[in-house]
Image (cartoon, rainbow, N blue to C red):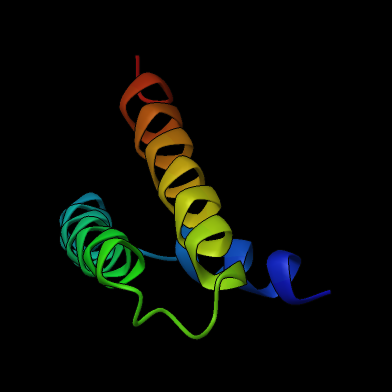
Length: 69
């Protein structure tokens, strides 16, 4: 349920907004990896969620670039 809602939110975004979202997710992923390395990560499941959100954003970016052609 949560991922389908997230997908509908992402699909409503423009390509520029998707790029910004991807950048934010990449920063969060870096911070989570850093926290895991230093032993400060509390929510280990968030790493997986962020990785999957990055894949969703990239998939939608690819769809939007191919759709007008």
